Image (tube, rainbow, N blue to C red; front, side, top):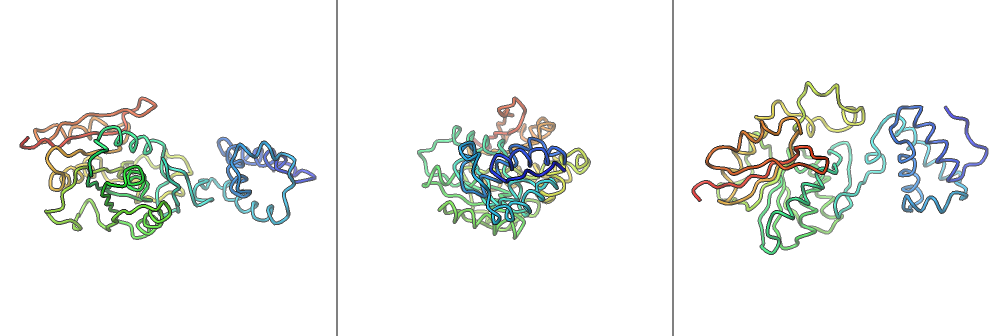
Length: 290
């Protein structure tokens, strides 16, 4: 452990904790302590650079120490602080929900660019987790109707809390995409979205410690790619209107396998790359009987 400074200031804490995190194998330790200090002091990260000489009180140090210890154990920052930013929203997160990824923000942005935002659309998010997708869509388009499902009771509690936090109305329903039972045949949607569990069990050992040790397995892993996306396709064929649109986030290594599920005469589909030029999304239109 690095030698503690004589006096604890913002700067000395930044320097000491950065070295401490590096010893513990934390990538970009400086960012981690900046995030924690900014949360503690209720300032923006960049504002810390204007506060280098500010002494940290004993109370602040006592509050910060357990947070630093948790981060040194590779617990994700978002779980430590309990919140993260997503698109245009502030989202609460706990270990009951997946931490929203930048790629999922890209999915939201792609949806908004792909559909007519002037129309009042009825949209469903399958496997909503924290609710970040429907909440951000609703916030951008208050005239849209948003529904969302998840199999996890705890995740739905977080999602409802996030809808309240962001002053948005989303209809949350407990349901499993593998055994859907929450919707009647008359429930038809203009848009269906899903970022389902898509990591295969044999990939677990290759995941970062922060992911495999802390994020919920229920939201990470599926038995097979065809099982989870095949179930979504079957559901969509019952509940997506003709010419309705389906947006899926996918594993970059299995894009062709997922796309093959949407190559019959009922669908027109394409793979969409993310900002890193990796195949990350499927955009499909239900064209049966058009």
